[in-house]
Length: 412
Ligand SMILES: *Cc1c(COP(=O)(O)O)cnc(C)c1O
Image (tube, rainbow, N blue to C red; front, side):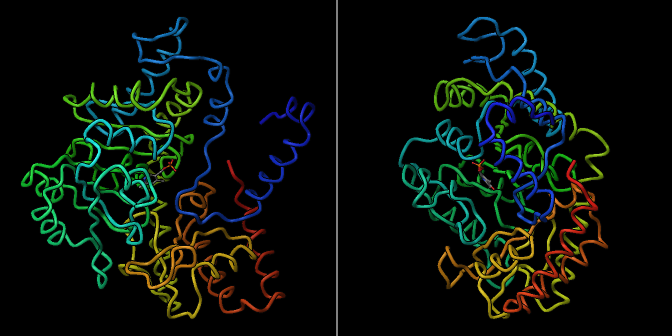
């Protein structure tokens, strides 16, 4: 992109941007929630649409001059509807957590009972963790994965639902590598009279490509971020059945938010347009192939993967048998230019700040064009770094190798 004005006017900020750009170019991103947007998505974010106020919705704004903003919001809505087979879409949520806040606000009263997956079992803070607004405002009951299989035990979910009679059941996670049984969740919810809410923040791109089951036709309401596997700008959308359209729209505005970020709406529209193409479907298929290869290679090297593999873009590695914590592994990988995020494992005996595992994901490196051959090398680098954590010479040699590969696969 052209940074002429920024470079001339504000060298202090420009320097930071360049440093971060260099870091992204030379280092390898295995953080499962990150990705690289296309130049077209970046350009859309840097347009004059950022100057506009447009509280309200297309055709019903509280400010003048919104004829073109209406167009862009309608394009984004229509593309998202097509992408996920949604009856109604709200494209204004500013990010994943605010979107979830709007969903709860639309369906629940403070104190209502909700079922969500526990954070250290792969859930998200906004699914009822005590330090999050969700856990403070609502009465969350947490379900867990089966410790042995690493998978959600649907019989257990049914038992808890029958006992607790929640008003809403939340499914869709941040650190869960297996297909989710949406139909079964829906059956359980119908039996106990609960709303169904899917948060597909992580897997949206894979669902849009129809490589994972789509909850949108099954569930009452579905939220997703737009910046993870979907590869759009930072932001979120909410999809729902027609009958809930007006309560969702009211919850987003005026309930939770003021004016939408119209430049981001434009970038969402561009990203949805990209996600509708065959190229994106091929990309999403390669994400999964790469994740499976990484899981297999690591298992061959003696690593324990929660649930013994993956159906999607991520995996949680239990490092207990390697005598190293997740935080240590994160720090060692940082030394060789690989970014990963520490992660709890189900039933983790260690504290969340220094848990037993790391979470690895392939969306970003797949965007760079890396395939199975590169993944095999990456698995060996990870293992070699962990085995040579006290050998600075070895680590700096690995860092050079990582950098070499990154240079061969430039960011779009
Ligand atoms: C990432 C994530 C979110 C939150 O998104 P932010 O944009 O960071 O607020 C919500 N739910 C799930 C399941 C996520 O993985």
